[in-house]
Length: 207
Image (cartoon, rainbow, N blue to C red):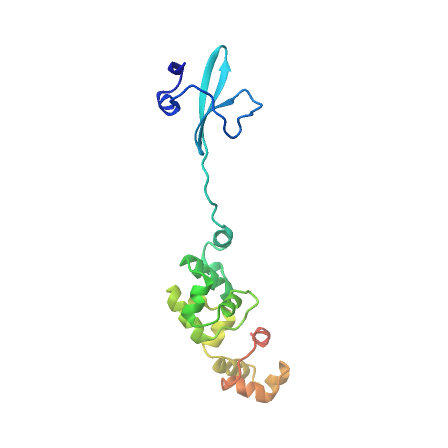
């Protein structure tokens, strides 16, 4: 009988006696012939008077949790080039994925709370302190300007002279300029002196 079996299986079988094991009550034509281990079985079947043997190897492994990897893959498909990205939040995500860093690792390096950094990657977040962004850029090995959207670039370049320049180009006083955008002359003065940050909403109206 064993002349019809692969030599390797013959060596594994050692005996022609059928043994009990899981799935021994198979309803198909294949029946369990021998359990070699918890992961390796031999099944037998009758075919035209001949006994045919087939091995069954069972492999088991753990699946990796794919959420983070899937997010990164989807993001890289959406933005294959960083020049396509318009928000600082998405720029941070792009370069963090590129460096294979976790949010908590970036937060720790920038010396900020993890929840604060998570909010940094929220597209609705509009303002980023330059000192924190500088630290993050250092970790990501990019120039800080690579992380800035238009609004934060405006702040980085100095809002005061830019506000003053556009006001004078319109030949308006601080009072007139403020009235045009619904703020006081004092607010315009503070903008131009860099004492009060221009909100993103106002920046969008002006520029």
